[in-house]
Length: 314
Image (cartoon, rainbow, N blue to C red; front, side, top):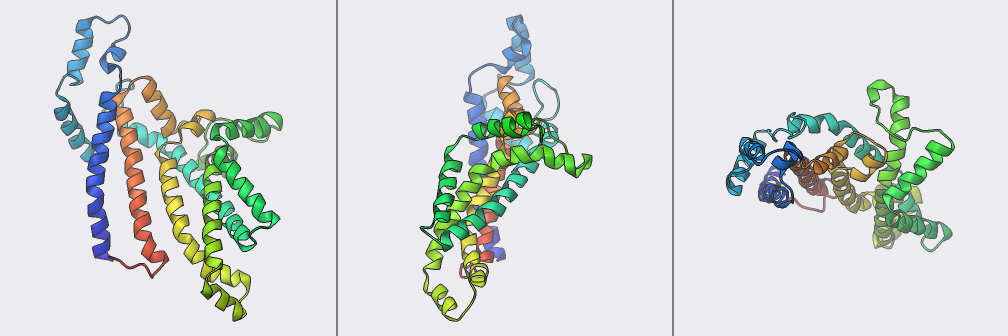
């Protein structure tokens, strides 16, 4: 177990290095001059050049990358060009809504999708199975922002049951917290729910046709026992894969959802930084998103042998 974990962690190191190079390269090659944007429309060339020298934008790109990488390893992601605050602090102040939305939508997806997929797989070809398949296709096809606007119009504007913008933490009351998070979480988790339900159904159908399931039924075990004790454990492997990668994607920046519902999360921070050409913030958010994705994939990889002991630590 220890050797397996160390090997996987070591394999992540070159991936992280490539991620840092890609993040820095994308922001470096993006059009626009941050110094000119900061100086304003009426700045003189001398003022723009002074800002460029102060920010070390005139240094060779390789030197800038090494300096940025050194600072990032120390936890220093730079200073925002416009707010003047440390990028790490900006991300930390915006991370709570994003984590809350990603976690809530993932929980909703698991609660809804796994039972739906198992029920559809248990009775393939029935009306229930076709309804679940229709839901999966619709959930993966309909744009998320369209779902968000429909939810806002229905539950926020027409009925007035739920708020349609902003974020409230748990410390301000569990009731208000749930009211503010439920609509964006449903919007964010719809595609994830449809995907997990479809994967669960396909995996469960294959498992239900295995010989050991027939033996369990011949021994007189109830269908509930067969599903929980034998089927669910094997279905969990692809579910963990999908949930892990999906959660990393959601946590990396729920840009559309936070924009539709005016939630001050990491996604909105990234949008504002792109509009103002705030390179340190863009680099910090992209780096955080990529690292979260890499770490979640590492955790998923380490989880496989725990779920199914037939998988050996090698």
